[in-house]
Length: 306
Image 1 (cartoon, helix red, strand yellow):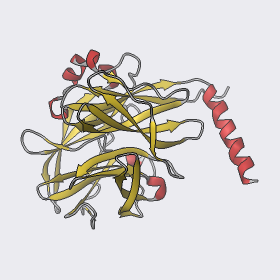
Image 2 (tube, rainbow, N blue to C red; image 1 turned 180 degrees about the vertical axis):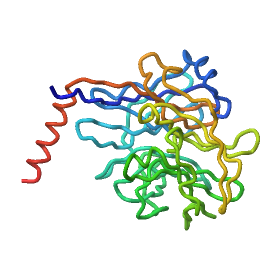
Image 3 (cartoon, rainbow, N blue to C red; image 1 turned 90 degrees about the horizontal axis):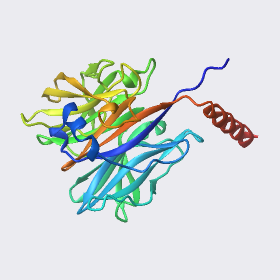
Image 4 (spheres, rainbow, N blue to C red; image 1 turned 90 degrees about the vertical axis):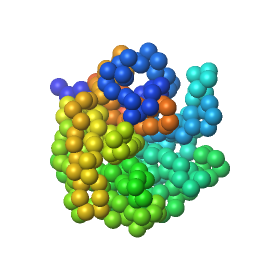
């Protein structure tokens, strides 16, 4: 008998707490106050949330994945923090390849995004136009690199980028790479110590880097020992210079069951936006309907090539 396929589904929540004040115990305490984004629909999901705030409007950018095409675009839904109501979804970036991890941030009075676009073989910088409804590609920060989940931080006069690289044996889940630059648009220099960490329990970036109360850079990373995106932990950089990196992995992990009753199988994004933190959590589906969707997609591709 053909084995039932395993399909991951994610959902996105807004936690009413600053990222630097969150602990697993605090996340569990806030469980009933998390505001969840409406789910994406049949055989689709939202994941990788990042946000910008404009008054009481929280603009949340997400990966919108569809199992029928096995590809994602980037969408925005806005949460009214006063009423708790969500806007309808709006597609903000759609390209001929898979997109995810819409890392958005503000700098020099403008809004920028570094989405995950490994299928284009680059880490690219985009700038918002027409508010945040349209995005223009500015340049490649790291050309000719199949990098995923690039996460940027401006700290101590330099820009830092944390990322993983696709390769054999799930390399992207077990290696952390770093690059640095004097300016946002580069040139960017990969760190000579790359990969700066090799470990299944925490390497691939999982959200917004931040500076903790001790002034140390802290990075959420995926703990993939149980499954892809099974949990998130933090890495603390005791030293971060263009010549040397020293990392301490924090012992606590953030898991889906702390935040949700059904999506208990993973938590792989923690992104900061002022006094709130955005997360995504995972459930696993083993329905055979996934095989039917895969078959239809292959048939469409076969007829499209004829």
